[in-house]
Length: 308
Image 1 (tube, rainbow, N blue to C red):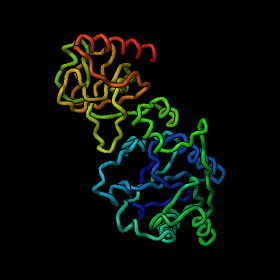
Image 2 (image 1 turned 180 degrees about the vertical axis):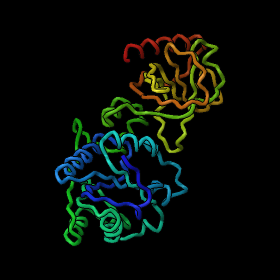
Image 3 (image 1 turned 90 degrees about the vertical axis):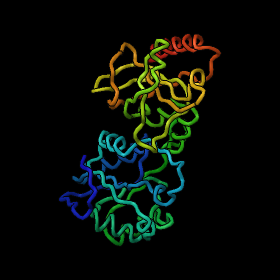
């Protein structure tokens, strides 16, 4: 996949089949669009392109709103899109000025003059342009004016529940990891740098790697204990992860993301660690003693081993 940030330098000699959107999570609903994109591109001898925007529109339009949480960092999303088969990732800079662009000018400037799109494929609820005034009917009218093809992908359901990034975020925040993973089509992932903690896990027999998630808008799932797979230097390790405030041993209540990896005793401070959340074992709770906590951790590890 080729990532493009300079539209003025973009050139292609083959038909370009384009879709547009944030594609946060690159979930199964997004895959329905990408699969159709690839099918159309193959039939017309073209290539696939996804047009997205950075920064996220909410960061620009509502800078004081710090509640924005996303399923992917830009790097994670790019990797997922490449794996899904997208050939060109077009990242256009989002600004207040751009947000005021009328829908017709949006189509003319980006899709026609910028990308010279052969076909534009969007989801059934896609909106664009100033005040989100443009929709599929707008695209249809503009396609007839400028001579490109358009196609709308209808809603896709899984177990009668409509797939959306919003529903996946809600499931993760409520601790419904299995449901979120089902809608995503993969295990939800946290990625970051291993930092120094207080070494408390080592003192009670369960050494942990403390993860600092580097992307500030990354959604952290509900507090609790999770069965995980961790990837370090392309090696996969099984383990358990605690997300929470550690109420039994830390009255200050600072959020920690701590991974205990099975049969692992390396010093990995400063290393990049990727963690796939496979199953949520239980919610976080306060124990009456450190001994009770130790006993529960041992049970959690036993449960995780069975799940993994």
